Length: 180
Image (cartoon, rainbow, N blue to C red):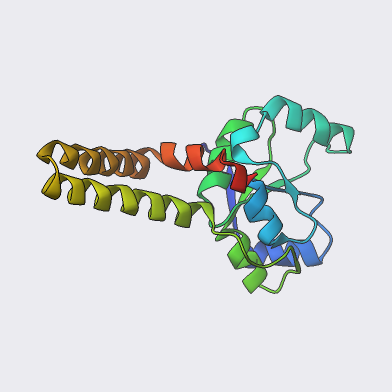
């Protein structure tokens, strides 16, 4: 992570928020995850649709000035870090909230949203990847050993995601209609 990007733990963020020192909070989760529940006052700018220059221009039009902090949040912190990397060259003072939305709400910050009915993107990836691995094993056992390649492909993708912090399956699932 870049040296220009700072991390703030959820309790320190909650204190800053309660003291009125937080003006700009961006939630980079999918719209469906955002609708299910988010920190009150957060703006949804999904990571897969983040246009750094456009966001900075919008924030400046809304009064973002030099020295102002921009806080980024997601479910647990990984997507917010990716967004911060994309924004750090354009905006100083980007802070990623460690622990994400869950930690903020656990610290007593007010939340908004329906509170349920949506499976988070991480769980969707786990369900899809697990199902594909299982399908590859079943088809490899019962139809043709070549189907084991499906399981190997998914395993390689998960390894790449873990090493790089970028998950192709998550990016694909984020574009599905139920996540819009």
